[in-house]
Length: 123
Image 1 (cartoon, rainbow, N blue to C red):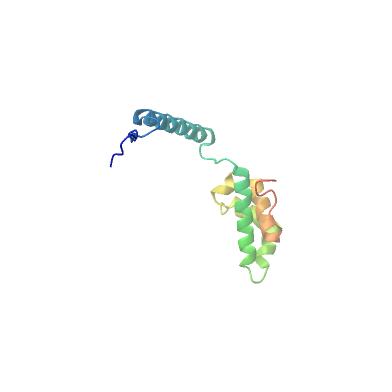
Image 2: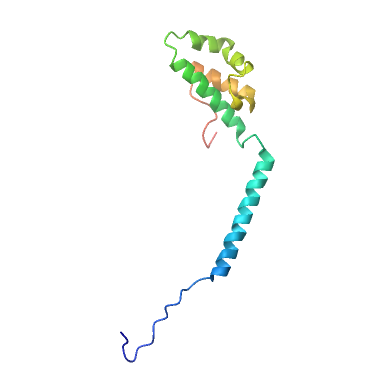
């Protein structure tokens, strides 16, 4: 319906053209891809924060063994050098290879029932 004496309504879309929008999205994608490539090249097989990952994996391993040990014999074994033997036998997994010392420390903390150290954002 057209009202007399009123200007017409502009129904064209406002904002950047499709071409400009596609160029900006393509540029952002290229920058993101380049950033991911640089991170992969820098860290290769070893992820960022590998030390934290190694400690946490050892802690979880020791904690699980302690929790599922009804007699407490396995936990005592871990505290008496069992964590080092697990890591040396390759039972620590790939995460133990990131930092073997921290994995063993985490395993000992988990086996002893201590709270994890150096975990979280602020450590």
